[in-house]
Length: 303
Picture 1 (cartoon, rainbow, N blue to C red):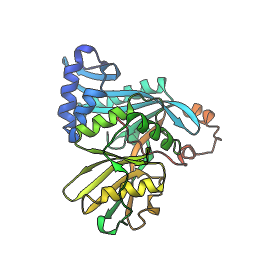
Picture 2 (tube, rainbow, N blue to C red):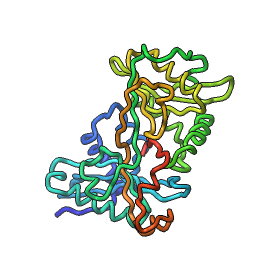
Picture 3 (tube, rainbow, N blue to C red):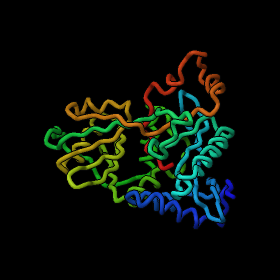
Picture 4 (cartoon, rainbow, N blue to C red):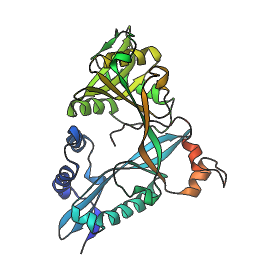
């Protein structure tokens, strides 16, 4: 007879093994996650016959949304054996996790590609990413002076905080975000570049290379010059460029000839609808969409 319970310290090896089997390498992300993010105290498991056949990791955050601080539960990773999926045990565990989240936070979030049935539980796409594709030969030669491999975690953290203040949906008071970004980049064989205007840090971007494309996976900038110089630096490396940014960013002003596509990045579930309406002063007929209508952030987070 199966049972759902919180994970114990004695489950760590079994959970990590299950995550590795189900998630694969994911270009280095799985090991990064297990070494730097995973905490068994934030996991629920489905145990059947003294075996853990499904696990869901849930991580609490504080988010800035609509000018308020709200509690968020992030469903970080879902790993299940085939039998757990086929017999509905994973879905049973998922419902139990949602019940827990309902009692602890106003909002639950999950990456759009984590489970195919999230929308059946009132998850809706609220944070999207915009992908800009263009050929190197069409990008203006802005010059790359000031772009370097030098990293300063304190200055990068300050830049991150300044940049995200223009958006909504960022996690608040996250410890060690930049050190984690640098560790993740190393694990995924990505590179981190910064842009300095004299001694002032005005931008950084994270990138990795495929056969013919340079992928800019995250880019933060103080101004248009910083953005243009970093994109010029990126476009020098491969014939094609892919830039990921928030759906609300107007990068078309710098790269007007790029092909743009918007994709769902993060799904959101409102756990207590009446409290949500009260918190954001929404009328009875006013859509929840209004809360996310202005400059939702591309949540390229670590869970």
